[in-house]
View 1 (cartoon, protein in one colour):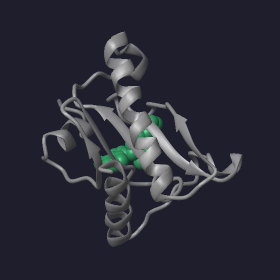
View 2: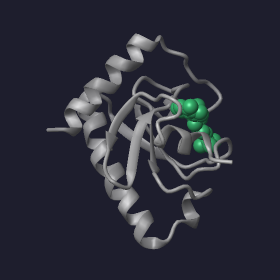
View 3: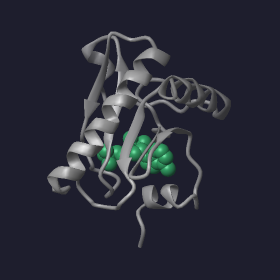
View 4: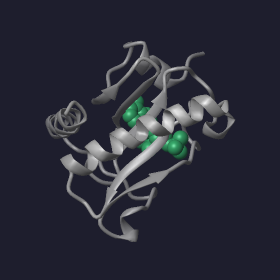
Length: 131
Ligand code: AMP
């Protein structure tokens, strides 16, 4: 069975899309640690990030680099944190989280933001990505 992220790639379930190219997709985490928390995935389904072939891993990180710059421009913050867990969804992904202090990185405390706010955040990041 396809992962939930493959279903997003296929357009079978919605997401708040931030950026896309032919091999990668970035969209907002549905339960963000902070507004703008973004997931960056390869469209090809591979369970675990560190099982990706080297060329696909490097391509994904280069795409994530561009997303991180757009995220920082759209959601002013001290740093964009990058994290890899993969405990919940078996489809390789990188978490990018705008943070102002170490304590902003806490996967036990996540938010549920209204849909219109999520859509507006995604549009802001997407606009910066497109510049
Ligand atoms: P992990 O696999 O532990 O790195 O966590 C998976 C992340 O995916 C969690 O932060 C979830 O909130 C997020 N997530 C799960 N389902 C969706 C979805 N349909 N859209 C966006 N984010 C999701």
